[in-house]
Amino acid sequence: MAISAVLLAYKEAENLKVLLPKIKQQLDKIGEEYEIIIVDTMKSLDDTPAVCKKFGARYVNQRLPHFGGAFRTGIKAARYDKFLIMDSDGSHNPIYIPDIYKKFVSGADVVIGSRYVKGGKTNDSKVSIIMSHILNFVFRIITGIKAKDISTEGVVGRLGHRAVELVVDAVILDEPTAFLDPLTEADILQEVLLKMKINNRKLVVKETPIVFEKRLYGESKRQLFKFILGYVKTLFMLIGVRINASFNKNRQK
Image 1 (cartoon, helix red, strand yellow):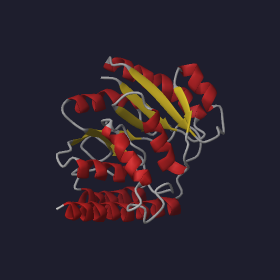
Image 2 (cartoon, rainbow, N blue to C red):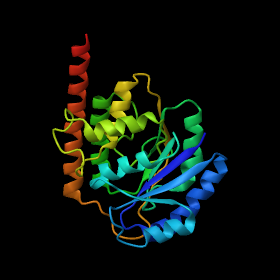
Image 3 (spheres, rainbow, N blue to C red):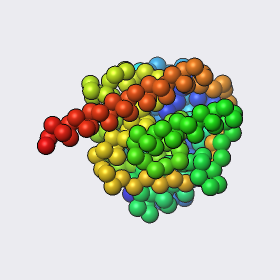
């Protein structure tokens, strides 16, 4: 079972120098064929291309703007039909990759590296943690996915099937979903999970504990106002997906 590890990067060259050797070490433990893809900005803003070359990672520039564009670029660039998607700032420690893999091969369609299951932890502020728990409660209701950590920023070690690519295309291109521009700051990951759930009602989602750590180098790109606005947009998107799915289902009857 070959794996495509996809990391979304924005001026993360210093962090990648530390992360890439660690990711390769953990993927080697699994014993499966793999590739590591770094999705950089449309035009590189640092030494990320040179770092990728040094450590044998595939370097690609995102073709569409914002997080949604980077996410879609990474999935489209992948050669294999299983995905491991991580942040590139060091907040997702590669040591959890083998645990994620074990959960996946045990019969899961998606595995979430979770801050909120037993053994998980986050170093975020108390305010951020409270907001996250509220968001997760709402996301569980809307998506119907009984996972404790759906609001994680980025995809924290989620391994999924090639069907994800079709879902990502739908997220980016579906007009009925686009009450708001799907390529803005809004997080599309919850929408991806929801569409996977709609397409497969028996979708198996498992969680494995991780410690969400502070970034290694550089300043966080997260701004509180944009963070809140992004998730408000995401909630509207998810409601739009639900409405659109119900409309299509009734029309097919």
